[in-house]
Amino acid sequence: MKSFCWVGGPVKAVATSLLCSLAASAPLLAQSATGSPPPWAYPLNLPDRLQAPDGDLPLTVPHSDRSFLRPQVTDRFSVPDWHPEEHPALPEVISHGQKPDVFACGYCHMPDGSGRPENASLAGLPVGYIKEQLADFRSGARKTAVPERNPVVSMISLARGMTPAQTETAAKYFSRLRRHNRTDVLETDTVPVTYATGWFLTVDPSAKSEPMGQRIIEIPEVLEQFERRDTRARFLAYVPPGSIKAGRALVRNGGPLACASCHGTDLNGRGLVPGIAGRSPSYIVRQLYDIQTGARDGAGVTPMKAVVKNLNLSNMISIAAYLVSLN
Image (cartoon, rainbow, N blue to C red; front, side, top):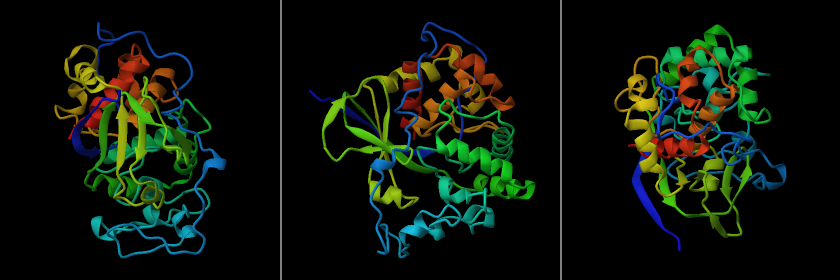
């Protein structure tokens, strides 16, 4: 029988980040994650499952008086800005980038910096942190455990093509933005069958269900709104029963994961350390896994290496479930 529990309601989509501490082991932690990267956290693009194009029909989204054609929505050098009143004027590097390699930053990370499950939310991140991450992409220190995932490949190429002035402009723009609530979390023992398309998961039209298992299933609530890159699109994260409570024990009860010592008592960041409360759970799992396997490196993640060394995948799921549940 299906069981479930709504937790909280809307939660904040917060900036790029990870957990931070100084200790490395405790009774709550099992051996480190092993085996292949979890496919549900690293969805790959399946061309045969892409959504059908809309042709020449004008596209719209709720609560916006604007319309765009499909080629405008899929142009990585021109941001479809549905709600321009909700953010400052877009600098050129955010709205259009620079051909051929610097895609518009706002295309993937959205004009309001809210990001998407396949990448990072940048709204409210410290300027220095954003610049550090771009430097890590540029140098090759920040990669991913699944090299064929295009979001990271694109970031590496983009970072190498950006000028210092563009880097400064982008960092300052995103740092000024306010974080928004975007994700609801649901503990359940069954989930809809999903498939990967466009580097994220979505519900299969078969409407069948399957056991939750040890994973996180993060999907857009309204696929059409999400695909049209509406900054108001919302997300639903299915997580295993009991994972939020287990994650709170890992994150809040001291020991090896004294996250508040670096990320602040509310886990919304402190100084140049980014916030982690309300972050996309699949993003959190990818970063924990990437750091543990050495795919993500750099000075900023050095304090994290001892922390993630002894995490297993179940720990990572619980931590991510708890963080996304925070208001």
